[in-house]
Image 1 (cartoon, rainbow, N blue to C red):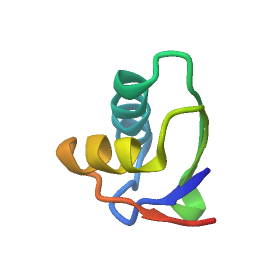
Image 2: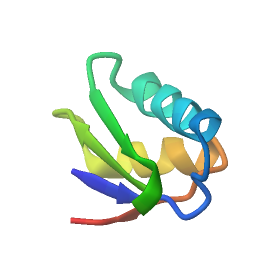
Image 3: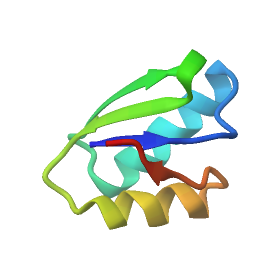
Image 4: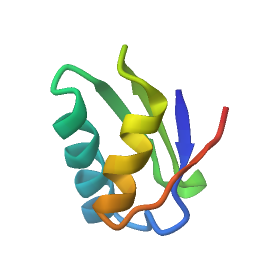
Length: 65
């Protein structure tokens, strides 16, 4: 799954986004594309769980699929 995160603008943001995603699924594979502000996530967990965790962390996301 992919998420577009408009306010992910630096490496620190990407680390925070990764941390929020891995709180939902510690085994998730996360790849951040900073220039395009997209995060690729490989996980069996529901997309909505990640969206909630990202919003709570201050990084509201929309599906970029």
